[in-house]
Each structure stands twice: as structure tokens, then as C-alpha cells.
Amino acid sequence: MSGIVQNNILRSSGTIAVSAAGLNWSDTIITGSTATVEAGNGYWINTTSNTCTITLPSSAEKGDQIVLIDYARTWGTNSIFIDSNGLNYQGNDDTYTVEYNTDGQSVNIIYSDATKGWIPLEDDVTADAPVAPPTQKGIFGYGFTGSNVSMTNLVNSSGVIAADVTGVGTARRGLAATSYGGDKAIFGYGYTGSYVSLTNLVSNSGVVASDTTGVGTARRYLDAASYGGDKGIFGYGSTGSNFSLTNLVSNSGVVSADVTGVGTARRYLAASSYGGDKAIFGYGYNGSSMVSLTNLVSNTGVVSSDTTGVGTARSNLAASNYGGDKAIFAYGSTTGDGSGAVSLKNLVSNTGVVASNVTGVGTARYALAATSYGGDKSIFGYGDNASDSKVSMSNLVSSSGVVASDVTGVGTARSYLGAAGYSTSA
Image 1: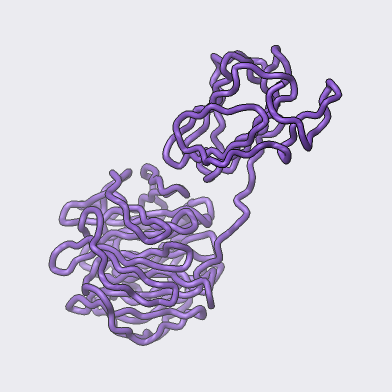
Image 2: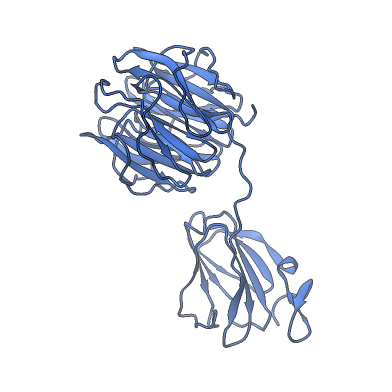
């Protein structure tokens, strides 16, 4: 027999076979593209960066046991493959492909005999039970009043916007913002008179940090959203030419290098988290026309190809999450000069499906921003109205996606600003 005999379940020989509780668990997290395992052991397999081929022992005895666990919940993106190393696996020889490709899966295999070989005792999926607490507050920041500004306005957990706070960092417009780290935010990119890629981190108490030299292509009119529960993604934008590239943000606020984009290059789009750990980019201007297409983002930050949109094609809209796991796109303009400003909305389900238009409430406007607040609600604020006048009004969104009438704004009226949620404390 190979493996350790202790704390075990019955075996036909009268000895005891290893149970999952009695296994020797590896001290090393396996991250490589290959790994060789031994009976009597449990292994943590982290496929965040690549697939992994697991080679089983070349000989085994009845009752030998091996357990493999999806350490980072990434097998759905990068699978594991089992090489049975000359022995059968569920009655098939080792020329067959054995793949496990579900996030959160664990595989508990027992060796039976030469005929059936290794047989899964369990290959269950474990639910992603821990759920990060939602952000309770929001922050609107930067923008354009006729000149670029760096001021911010905090939003409390009841959706009340505070007076202007003198900004920190370079004044700019056409930037984007997202939550990261579960309770913090980041503003990034924009236009100062030239395109920039700098960022400003926001603490969990709403304090904006000084400029951090950016990574990636300097651009404006992009957007951003959180994904994966504690990370963020900046995507798309323009320097005159539209882009579809993205930049991921780690849970410590570090922006990564450019990732070649998927989907239609465009600017003036919007983005939001949805489904608890995923994101969606939607709508925008492709250089010749307004579009209503969307691109979903997985919980590992992978952007999918275009999905034909639902609802009115438009640009310069805003988006935010609501209800804990859903999203809302709202407002925007169907024309390039703002005369086509609208107040309609499109709700997004917790599976990323965009619903048809719902006639909006409140003043039609564009170049506004939106953020979550209060754990499960949203607020749209600021922007330009159909007469190209800047406004500071806001509209609250309930936990069921209902948009409320205008609330007279607080703070400097402006457009082309950014907004994001922060703080898990009310």
C-alpha cells in the first residue's frame, strides 16, 4: 500500500483506508503547469496563471486516496488535467483526457483495482461562501466646469452628497473610478490638456492621495468597475483614436500594464460591477456611431467579446451596481452635441443580461457619474443637460432599481467626472 494509514474509513482488507480528514496536506501551493502527486496526500492547486497537469502515481493499491482542491477558484478559467500515468481512470486508460474545469471544485479520488483504476469518491463544487461586505459610501471626483478641477464630494450611507472638498492631485476630466480592496477607491487616467495615465487612491475614510504615476496607455473617456470582489478594471477610452485595451487593478490598488482589449474599441461608455464579482462595460461611441453593445468581465478580469446590446444606443451615460448583485445603466446622449440627452435606464440582471429601456425619471443629461452607496443602492450625479448647462443635481436609485426624482445638488456643477464606492462602515 502507498499512503498513510490513520483516521480512516473501512477497507475491504480489514485495514483502514485514508479519509480526507486524515490525509497529509501539502505545505506548498502548487502553481506550476505540472505537478506529480502521491497517494495519501491532499494538494492545493492554484491555476490563476495557467492550467496544470497532475500526474498520478504509476502504481497504486486498493484504497489509495488523493485529494485535489481548487485553491483560488480558478479552475473554470484554467483547468486541471489528470494524467493517470499508465493506470485506468474510471475504467478508461490514460490515453483519455480527464479535465476538471469548474471554479471551487474539489476532487477526491480512490484507487479501486486494475479494471476501473482511480474513481472519484467526490468531485463536488464548494460554494464561494464568504461574501465581502458592500461599500456604504461613495465619492464623486474631478471633472470639468469650463476648466478642469480636482475637487471631490463624499456621499454618505444615506445617499446625501457633502459639500466640495478641495482636491488633491492633478485637475482633470474624462477620467474613471472604481472600488478596489473591498473598501477603497481609485481615480485614474483623464485629460489635463494632454492625456494622462496617473492615478489617485482613495482611503476607506474617503481621503484622496496624491498622484501616482500611471501604468498603461494615457487616455480619457474610459470607464472602470470592480470585479472579483476586491479588484478593479479600467477599460476602453480614447486619445483621438478609440481603444479596447484594459488595465487591471490589484486588491492593493496597483494598476497593471495594458491588456489587449476584446470587443469594439470605443469611448464615452459606462461600466459597473454585477453578480457580486463580475463587471460589465456598455454602450459608447465607436468613432462613427453610438452603440448599445456590452462586454462582460469574468471574476478573474477576462473581458468577453461583444454582446449585441438592448436598448437605445447612446454615449456619455453612467452605470452603477444596485441590489447587491445587479447593475443599472442610465442617462446619456444619442447625439454628439448633447441635444439628444435622455433620462432612460436599462437594468442589468445578476447574470449580466441587459433589459430593455425604461423611461427615466429626472432631468435628461449626459457626462455624469454614478456610484453605489448604502450597501445596495446607487446615486447618479452631476453632468450636462440638453442645453449644455452643467448641473449638480442627483438621482437616487433604490435597492430594486427604481430611480427617484431630482434632488437639488450640493457642490460645484460639473461634467466628465468619476465616481466610486468606498468604506464598508456606514
